[in-house]
Amino acid sequence: MSAPPLSDQVVLITGASRGLGAALARAFGREGARVVVNYYQSTDAAHEVAASIGDRALPYQADVRNREAVQSMVDAAADHFGAPVTTVISNALIDFQFDAEARATADTVSWSNYQTQLEGSVQAALHLVQACRPAMKEAGFGRFVAIGSNLVQNPVVPYHDYTTSKAALLGFLRNMAQELGPEGITVNMVSGGLLDRTDASDATSDEVFDLIRNSTPLRSVTTPEEMADAVLFFASPWARAITGQNLIVDGGLVMQ
Image 1 (cartoon, helix red, strand yellow):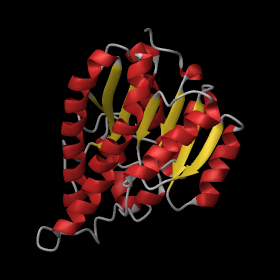
Image 2 (image 1 turned 30 degrees about the vertical axis):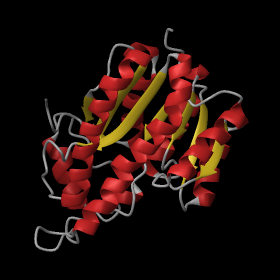
Image 3 (image 1 turned 30 degrees about the horizontal axis):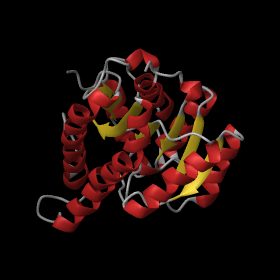
Image 4 (image 1 turned 180 degrees about the vertical axis):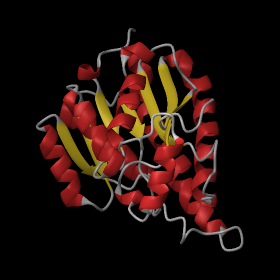
Protein backbone atom coordinates (compact mmCIF):
# COMPACT_ATOMS: atom_id res chain seq x y z
CA MET A 1 0.00 0.00 0.00
CA SER A 2 1.31 3.46 -0.85
CA ALA A 3 1.69 5.93 1.98
CA PRO A 4 -1.36 8.18 2.41
CA PRO A 5 -0.98 11.96 2.53
CA LEU A 6 -0.92 13.66 5.90
CA SER A 7 -4.50 14.81 5.39
CA ASP A 8 -5.67 11.16 5.42
CA GLN A 9 -3.82 10.18 8.57
CA VAL A 10 -5.04 9.85 12.15
CA VAL A 11 -2.16 11.11 14.26
CA LEU A 12 -1.67 10.48 17.97
CA ILE A 13 0.72 12.89 19.67
CA THR A 14 1.66 12.28 23.28
CA GLY A 15 2.39 15.19 25.58
CA ALA A 16 0.65 17.51 23.14
CA SER A 17 -0.64 20.18 25.50
CA ARG A 18 2.47 22.33 25.65
CA GLY A 19 5.82 23.14 24.04
CA LEU A 20 6.95 20.86 21.25
CA GLY A 21 3.88 18.64 21.58
CA ALA A 22 1.53 21.57 21.01
CA ALA A 23 3.59 22.68 18.00
CA LEU A 24 3.40 19.14 16.60
CA ALA A 25 -0.37 18.98 17.06
CA ARG A 26 -0.88 22.32 15.33
CA ALA A 27 1.48 21.37 12.49
CA PHE A 28 -0.41 18.15 11.73
CA GLY A 29 -3.71 19.99 12.12
CA ARG A 30 -2.57 22.58 9.61
CA GLU A 31 -1.90 19.79 7.11
CA GLY A 32 -5.45 18.47 7.55
CA ALA A 33 -4.68 15.41 9.67
CA ARG A 34 -7.01 14.18 12.39
CA VAL A 35 -5.12 14.70 15.62
CA VAL A 36 -5.34 13.10 19.07
CA VAL A 37 -4.03 15.69 21.54
CA ASN A 38 -2.83 13.50 24.39
CA TYR A 39 -2.14 15.04 27.79
CA TYR A 40 -1.52 13.88 31.33
CA GLN A 41 -2.27 16.82 33.66
CA SER A 42 -2.62 20.00 31.57
CA THR A 43 -6.32 19.75 30.78
CA ASP A 44 -6.99 23.39 29.91
CA ALA A 45 -3.89 23.71 27.74
CA ALA A 46 -4.72 20.53 25.83
CA HIS A 47 -8.26 21.67 25.14
CA GLU A 48 -6.92 25.02 23.92
CA VAL A 49 -4.59 23.24 21.49
CA ALA A 50 -7.45 21.07 20.25
CA ALA A 51 -9.71 24.11 19.86
CA SER A 52 -7.05 25.82 17.74
CA ILE A 53 -7.15 22.85 15.34
CA GLY A 54 -10.93 22.51 15.23
CA ASP A 55 -13.22 19.53 14.87
CA ARG A 56 -10.41 17.34 13.51
CA ALA A 57 -8.80 17.25 16.97
CA LEU A 58 -9.59 15.07 19.98
CA PRO A 59 -8.10 15.98 23.38
CA TYR A 60 -7.58 12.83 25.47
CA GLN A 61 -6.13 12.35 28.95
CA ALA A 62 -3.93 9.30 29.41
CA ASP A 63 -0.75 8.41 31.27
CA VAL A 64 1.41 6.85 28.57
CA ARG A 65 3.17 4.73 31.19
CA ASN A 66 -0.10 2.87 31.73
CA ARG A 67 -0.72 0.20 29.10
CA GLU A 68 -4.48 0.03 29.64
CA ALA A 69 -4.80 3.81 29.43
CA VAL A 70 -2.91 3.87 26.14
CA GLN A 71 -5.06 1.10 24.69
CA SER A 72 -8.23 2.92 25.74
CA MET A 73 -6.97 6.12 24.10
CA VAL A 74 -6.17 4.34 20.83
CA ASP A 75 -9.59 2.66 20.83
CA ALA A 76 -11.36 5.95 21.60
CA ALA A 77 -9.53 7.68 18.75
CA ALA A 78 -10.66 5.01 16.28
CA ASP A 79 -14.24 5.32 17.50
CA HIS A 80 -14.21 9.10 17.37
CA PHE A 81 -12.64 9.48 13.93
CA GLY A 82 -14.06 6.33 12.35
CA ALA A 83 -10.57 5.25 11.39
CA PRO A 84 -7.62 3.77 13.30
CA VAL A 85 -4.50 5.61 14.39
CA THR A 86 -1.98 5.41 11.56
CA THR A 87 0.72 7.71 12.93
CA VAL A 88 2.18 7.99 16.43
CA ILE A 89 4.47 10.74 17.71
CA SER A 90 5.97 9.74 21.06
CA ASN A 91 6.83 13.08 22.61
CA ALA A 92 5.71 13.08 26.26
CA LEU A 93 8.36 14.12 28.79
CA ILE A 94 7.82 12.85 32.33
CA ASP A 95 8.90 14.90 35.36
CA PHE A 96 11.97 16.58 33.91
CA GLN A 97 13.36 20.11 33.67
CA PHE A 98 16.45 21.18 31.74
CA ASP A 99 18.18 22.98 34.61
CA ALA A 100 21.96 22.69 34.43
CA GLU A 101 22.40 24.13 37.92
CA ALA A 102 19.93 21.85 39.69
CA ARG A 103 20.54 18.63 37.74
CA ALA A 104 21.35 15.33 39.40
CA THR A 105 25.12 14.76 39.26
CA ALA A 106 27.12 11.55 39.10
CA ASP A 107 27.21 11.54 42.91
CA THR A 108 23.53 12.27 43.47
CA VAL A 109 21.62 10.66 40.59
CA SER A 110 19.62 7.64 41.74
CA TRP A 111 18.35 4.57 39.97
CA SER A 112 14.83 5.86 40.53
CA ASN A 113 15.76 8.94 38.45
CA TYR A 114 16.81 6.63 35.63
CA GLN A 115 13.71 4.51 36.06
CA THR A 116 11.40 7.53 35.82
CA GLN A 117 12.91 8.59 32.51
CA LEU A 118 13.11 5.06 31.09
CA GLU A 119 9.44 4.55 31.88
CA GLY A 120 8.54 7.86 30.25
CA SER A 121 10.56 7.07 27.12
CA VAL A 122 10.89 3.35 26.46
CA GLN A 123 7.92 1.98 28.38
CA ALA A 124 5.61 4.59 26.86
CA ALA A 125 6.90 3.83 23.36
CA LEU A 126 6.34 0.11 23.91
CA HIS A 127 2.74 0.68 24.97
CA LEU A 128 2.09 2.88 21.94
CA VAL A 129 3.61 0.43 19.46
CA GLN A 130 1.72 -2.53 20.89
CA ALA A 131 -1.60 -0.67 20.97
CA CYS A 132 -1.34 0.66 17.42
CA ARG A 133 0.43 -2.15 15.59
CA PRO A 134 -2.58 -4.41 14.87
CA ALA A 135 -4.48 -1.76 12.89
CA MET A 136 -1.30 -0.56 11.18
CA LYS A 137 -0.45 -4.12 10.16
CA GLU A 138 -3.94 -4.66 8.77
CA ALA A 139 -3.70 -1.44 6.77
CA GLY A 140 -0.17 -2.17 5.58
CA PHE A 141 0.86 1.29 6.69
CA GLY A 142 2.08 2.94 9.88
CA ARG A 143 4.36 5.70 11.04
CA PHE A 144 6.04 5.84 14.45
CA VAL A 145 8.25 8.82 15.28
CA ALA A 146 9.85 9.36 18.68
CA ILE A 147 11.43 12.54 19.95
CA GLY A 148 15.07 12.11 20.96
CA SER A 149 17.88 14.44 21.96
CA ASN A 150 21.20 15.53 20.54
CA LEU A 151 22.58 15.13 24.06
CA VAL A 152 23.03 11.44 23.22
CA GLN A 153 25.66 12.45 20.65
CA ASN A 154 26.97 15.47 22.56
CA PRO A 155 26.21 15.46 26.31
CA VAL A 156 27.36 19.03 26.79
CA VAL A 157 25.27 19.05 29.97
CA PRO A 158 25.29 15.59 31.58
CA TYR A 159 21.62 15.01 32.28
CA HIS A 160 22.37 11.41 33.22
CA ASP A 161 18.88 9.97 33.52
CA TYR A 162 17.27 11.86 30.63
CA THR A 163 20.06 11.25 28.11
CA THR A 164 20.40 7.57 29.01
CA SER A 165 16.68 7.08 28.45
CA LYS A 166 16.89 8.66 25.00
CA ALA A 167 19.83 6.44 24.07
CA ALA A 168 17.84 3.39 25.17
CA LEU A 169 14.86 4.64 23.19
CA LEU A 170 16.93 4.77 20.01
CA GLY A 171 17.92 1.13 20.49
CA PHE A 172 14.28 0.22 21.07
CA LEU A 173 13.21 2.02 17.90
CA ARG A 174 15.80 0.38 15.68
CA ASN A 175 14.75 -3.07 16.85
CA MET A 176 11.12 -2.20 16.15
CA ALA A 177 12.06 -0.82 12.73
CA GLN A 178 13.64 -4.16 11.84
CA GLU A 179 10.62 -6.20 12.96
CA LEU A 180 7.81 -3.96 11.75
CA GLY A 181 9.26 -2.95 8.39
CA PRO A 182 7.75 -5.92 6.49
CA GLU A 183 4.32 -4.71 7.63
CA GLY A 184 4.75 -1.28 6.04
CA ILE A 185 5.44 0.41 9.38
CA THR A 186 8.40 2.80 9.62
CA VAL A 187 10.01 3.71 12.93
CA ASN A 188 12.24 6.77 13.25
CA MET A 189 13.53 9.38 15.68
CA VAL A 190 13.86 13.16 15.45
CA SER A 191 16.37 14.56 17.92
CA GLY A 192 16.50 18.21 18.84
CA GLY A 193 18.67 20.20 21.13
CA LEU A 194 17.49 22.80 23.59
CA LEU A 195 14.36 24.35 22.09
CA ASP A 196 13.55 28.04 22.14
CA ARG A 197 11.67 28.27 24.53
CA THR A 198 9.40 25.67 26.17
CA ASP A 199 8.21 24.87 29.68
CA ALA A 200 10.86 22.16 29.90
CA SER A 201 13.64 24.66 29.10
CA ASP A 202 12.21 27.50 31.16
CA ALA A 203 14.85 27.05 33.85
CA THR A 204 17.66 27.38 31.31
CA SER A 205 19.53 30.67 31.51
CA ASP A 206 19.74 33.20 28.71
CA GLU A 207 23.51 32.69 28.74
CA VAL A 208 23.11 29.04 27.80
CA PHE A 209 20.72 29.93 24.99
CA ASP A 210 23.21 32.51 23.72
CA LEU A 211 26.03 29.95 23.87
CA ILE A 212 24.04 27.47 21.81
CA ARG A 213 22.96 30.14 19.33
CA ASN A 214 26.54 31.25 18.75
CA SER A 215 27.79 27.65 18.43
CA THR A 216 25.47 26.61 15.60
CA PRO A 217 26.26 27.21 11.93
CA LEU A 218 22.81 28.76 11.52
CA ARG A 219 23.39 31.04 14.54
CA SER A 220 19.98 30.16 15.91
CA VAL A 221 18.26 28.07 18.56
CA THR A 222 15.84 25.57 17.03
CA THR A 223 12.17 26.30 17.61
CA PRO A 224 9.43 23.75 18.31
CA GLU A 225 7.91 24.65 14.93
CA GLU A 226 11.16 23.79 13.14
CA MET A 227 11.29 20.44 14.93
CA ALA A 228 7.69 19.80 13.93
CA ASP A 229 8.57 20.27 10.27
CA ALA A 230 11.05 17.37 10.45
CA VAL A 231 8.47 15.14 12.14
CA LEU A 232 5.97 15.98 9.38
CA PHE A 233 8.52 14.75 6.86
CA PHE A 234 8.88 11.35 8.54
CA ALA A 235 5.09 10.95 8.59
CA SER A 236 4.72 12.00 4.96
CA PRO A 237 4.78 9.88 1.80
CA TRP A 238 8.21 11.36 0.98
CA ALA A 239 9.77 9.35 3.82
CA ARG A 240 8.34 6.02 2.67
CA ALA A 241 11.78 4.41 2.25
CA ILE A 242 13.26 5.65 5.55
CA THR A 243 13.21 3.65 8.77
CA GLY A 244 15.46 3.08 11.77
CA GLN A 245 16.97 6.55 11.42
CA ASN A 246 17.74 9.35 13.86
CA LEU A 247 17.58 12.83 12.33
CA ILE A 248 19.23 15.53 14.42
CA VAL A 249 17.51 18.90 14.07
CA ASP A 250 19.56 21.49 15.96
CA GLY A 251 20.86 24.04 13.47
CA GLY A 252 23.99 22.00 12.80
CA LEU A 253 25.30 21.99 16.37
CA VAL A 254 25.81 18.22 16.15
CA MET A 255 26.81 16.86 12.74
CA GLN A 256 26.72 13.17 11.82
